[in-house]
Image: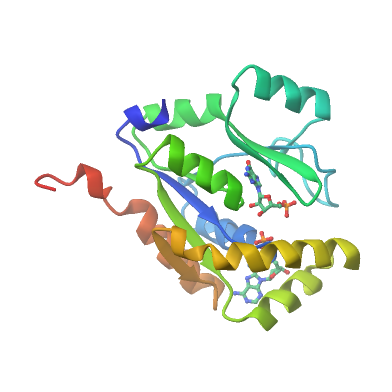
Length: 195
Ligand code: ADP
Ligand code: 5GP
């Protein structure tokens, strides 16, 4: 189990379009040593996305195989595609004692919390609903019908922010990245002597 290792696992979640990818990219630009899990997905690559870097793009049969062989820490269906966290690479990383970051949606974050209560759950929130709508539309990577589907899910995700250990507001990319870095490197509450 992941929980048996001393390293801290941090989960970053938040609605589609809030800026998770942007903030994580900024964290990695400043701190290349921060390790971010590469998920598997059945979604088709967007223009510019690279297999093995942005995601491991797989077909349904391969995703089924990963579930059946217990190869995923968690997985979820989101807006018509499946996404999951490969367990192998995460175990290897955590066994070195170094922190790891997962960028996943709400159902997956809940599974991680159930499986590893020591994991730190961080919710990235938009400064306003209007900002979220305009960011998702401004990214222009999905047709309007898919944007609508993602916004409907976003409302439920925002309602669940209280389930998270910390909420970071993505008002400004650099500021949000700084806050996330400080959370990634903060000592795990469970590991502080005397607590
Ligand atoms: P997610 O990974 O959460 O779906 P993205 O990182 O793709 O979101 O960001 C969605 C859009 O919002 C992108 O066009 C991105 O440039 C923009 N964006 C991200 N963070 C901010 C911010 N703090 N202020 C303004 N625009 C932002
Ligand atoms: P996108 O299609 O925009 O890349 O991702 C859609 C949603 O899936 C985002 O909220 C993203 O955080 C989430 N996601 C990406 N990888 C995983 C994963 O491994 N597991 C789960 N549960 N969600 C993921």
